[in-house]
Image 1 (cartoon, rainbow, N blue to C red):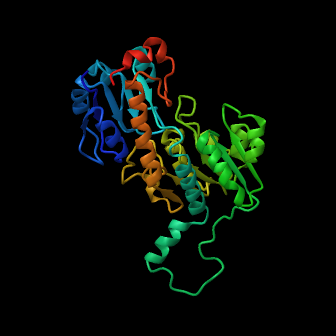
Image 2: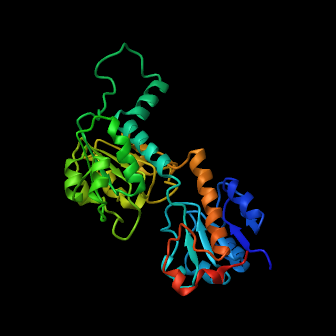
Amino acid sequence: MAKPRIYVTRMIPPPAFEELGRLCELEIHQSKETPPSREELLRRVADKDALICLLTDRIDGEVMEAGPNLKVIATYSVGFDHIDLEEATRRGIYVVNTPGTATDSVADFTWALILAASRRLVEADRFVRAGKWSGPWNPYLLVGKGLRGKVLGIIGLGRIGKAVAERAKGFGLKRVIYYDVVRPPKEVEERLGVEYSSLEELLRESDVISINAPLTPETYHMIDEEALKLVKPSAVLVNTGRGPIVDEEALKKALKEGRVYAAGLDVFEREPIPPDDELLGFENVIVTPHIASADEYSRELMSRMVAENVLAALSGRIPEALCNPDVVRVRPPEELKMI
């Protein structure tokens, strides 16, 4: 039996290559930073049995048509909104992701942004580096917002939202409220110390708003101009979910009008954000280049899960992290068996 052929759209940490290389033929786009062009992607998948992609690769019907032998598409990410699941299911292609691998790293980073934006950390760093710290200590210099006695609002209480709530326990907050379309069991709410809220109530009452929801048609521009009108002018907004959840034009307007105290953004509607984007001109906005999951452990864990998912599918088993479970009715897993 011929070895399965796999195309990988970027160089990723080594566990995946080591495990897959023993059983499969790998063709890897030799760049850590730049994805293949659309034309190259379409050409490379032509004779492949599996595709390993990143969230920056648009995997739609055109790609699947170009790869008629594709049995599995694995994304090196938790999010999978860049893949047309409906089309993949129709074609009997198994789509897998890496859930749970970035939970702790993203939750940690969310709190890093909350603290940095609330306490004006980046602004203070720039102040010192620019030589502006020329006088003695004074009680008014770069005063920020504390967290004790405040209300944290979490939008999206999935794995990461729950981890953000867990980390909130040490900050002396008055309340932690959350909004999600799916409520967990009451015992989960009690364990986390969170209270369910409507989105409108959360926006009105929160001193810190943490966006940890996935991008769906329902969450696209969830935080728009009308939503931002409900937010306290003293509130901090942090987004480590997906960029398009926030209407950036509406956020810019709110920042100009002083209706939001500060923002910490790791994700954007357009990535990379253009260097001349107006968002980059606000002193009270902290921006990072989509790196919330960027710790060594998480990235290697993601790589390992990608390999396990692909090998499971190509061994005729249902992968643990299957994004489109209905596909098993279109193509039973045993039909994918190559190894």
